[in-house]
Image 1 (tube, rainbow, N blue to C red):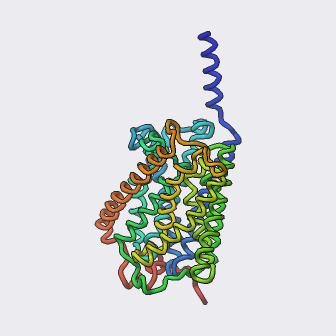
Image 2 (cartoon, rainbow, N blue to C red):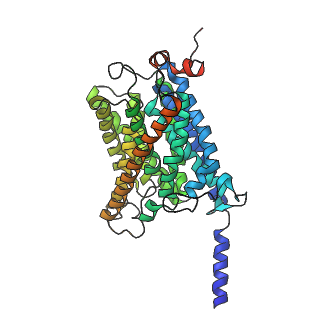
Length: 426
């Protein structure tokens, strides 16, 4: 009997340790899709939203963040996020991918692929923060801030949620990054906007997008790439991935139509900017829920995303007069908070056509799941606020300030910081 048990256990271990070609192919594809979200998707989306004299600066920021984040993720970021460590941070066991070879597996896919997939998340998250300080931060300050923020904010929270840390142990449901990506980026953008102050002329000067064609093109790339972002987070080519892609699409479409309808009623005309912003709100809000809710829940989540994020954007700019330049907090931050909390509702299996696929292991009630989701949101917000503020103060001291001077801001960051122009008219 003991021999039989050992044989069965050995067979199970062998099966578990075997590479799955289908899953590997899907995560390879998803990894390319998520990188496509930043380069060129987010870069074009943000680039079109700023004034023409700053378009190259935004493209350069996204490009440089992709580079520095990749290097830091290889050196120690991945190890600290996904190494065993303790409840709050990983360890240095995988520094420079130590002992990880071509045959090393994470589940049934190559560990090198899992690391690369997670790297694309580590790239887009600090790149999202760019929208909070666009058109006024020094390039040197941006580089140092992004590097420090990745290691001191993104990496620890990734470990808390996905790397075996305390929030994951509590049962927090965050399928693809409501807390890890969207709340952290949104809150960091808000803190940065407050610390740096508004662009000169805000709010009386109209800062209209210089190239909506570029912005809509980038938004389309984000929508497509998000299938890899959420669908790939299943880490398998299975029904979980398929359902995650379906609910992602439904929420994006509903968010876009909701924002467009509100804008149409309020201002008399629907705008392309409103439609694509509502789409991004729908995508960000469904992200934490995408592996746990069904299409009915996604429809409601998209509806709430479009309406709540629209209200938050209007309130932040028009009432509070905070110059979060490209609306990172009201879209990603508020959307991430909303979506993370709504997981606690729409993951329930007792809501009929709006039912999801159940609460976390060990949690038996909606109230219990909502409490864990709230703790996850609160911890992420508080930690991000404190750490982002501290990092900005350190960077300001190290770089002699965070922002360019008034004359440089007036001339534009493209020519001042990079000696180039986005558009040369001969």
